[in-house]
Length: 188
Image (cartoon, rainbow, N blue to C red; front, top):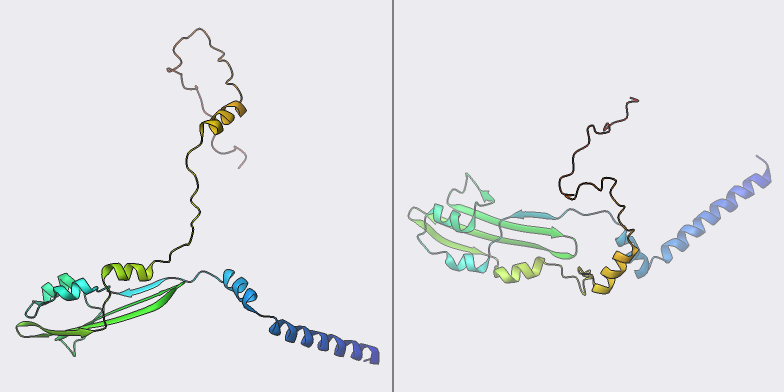
């Protein structure tokens, strides 16, 4: 290989290396915002039962399994090895909202609900507020036209063409055409 080709290859490699190092150094907050704007859609993942403070307050010792199930829903984990224990787990992963995970366990004995324990559960309003991503100053379009805009629109529209059949004074009884054009072109 001639010497000028080798030096050209070396020069191209050095330029590529320098460009990559410069690109890494210029990745700042504006670049991060741009990169996050073009990232693909991330699926919202919601698993388990939402248990609120109001539901926990309604639990009472001695409730039957069916009453607990009616109040809290079907447990996410009901193990054969722990027949007297139901575990309720709730997780949500959503873009723009901090990841949430809550656990709640219900214990039964022969007479019914024995005890329950778990994370501090939010009230229904607190839960809704925690998953709602509020948009600051949403742009709501105006849905009504002003009389001036309507008048301008009517002025821009062409006048309707006079009907060819002026003998009939009742325009509500229009006769349908004898045949309709084909839906597909005949050249298939």
